[in-house]
Length: 232
Ligand code: C5P
Image (cartoon, rainbow, N blue to C red; front, side, top):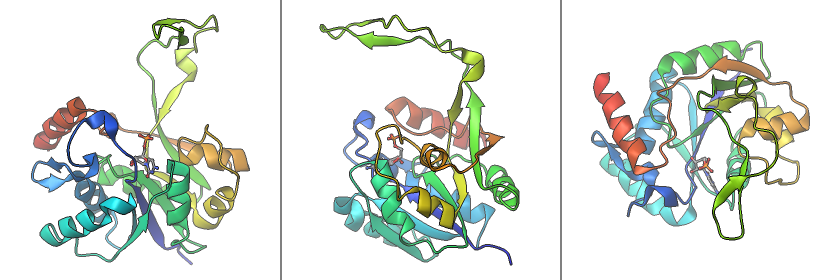
């Protein structure tokens, strides 16, 4: 039997690097909140996907207001976030049943294409975990900060660029396996779901990500996202 599809939107970060008065997932991007655009990307690709949204507790009322102003027209489970991304995803997974395919997507990646989402759900018929990655194009340096705060060579070898890839979202898993992985105790190295799944022993498969699927982090990213949207 075909597995049901779920998507968790992580949007419970503090977003201090955006330097905006409104949380970055609520900023308007070409007339629609960023988080709406991320959700619509999934609904366009897969209209029957079930939506779980994780937000800071103190922003849930604002999100409900925005959903009245800009209707989503799909049922949505709203979950309060946790202290780290790991804790936020763990809270959201409690709303996802076993036996589904679950995608976890950063709420601030509104430009993911419907084609990538569809292809990933299709590949999940034969994969246990699927992660979009891109080769790194910059040369990498191993640095740390001295007591005065200035950057300096760490003395460790620089990472070999040919062997390093950047991981994006959405990342997809079998829900019962990801829920089992999230019973692991928290570790600071868990900056995405693939790192938790790998630690638990779930074999990861990879797919080429998309350059335009940027994670909106700084004010410059908003400008870039506006530019990409207007190219569509
Ligand atoms: O930490 P980073 O900036 O990579 O955040 C990735 C995603 O995780 C963002 O969408 C952010 O809102 C989310 N997050 C969360 N709960 C936290 C911290 C981050 O949902 N406590």
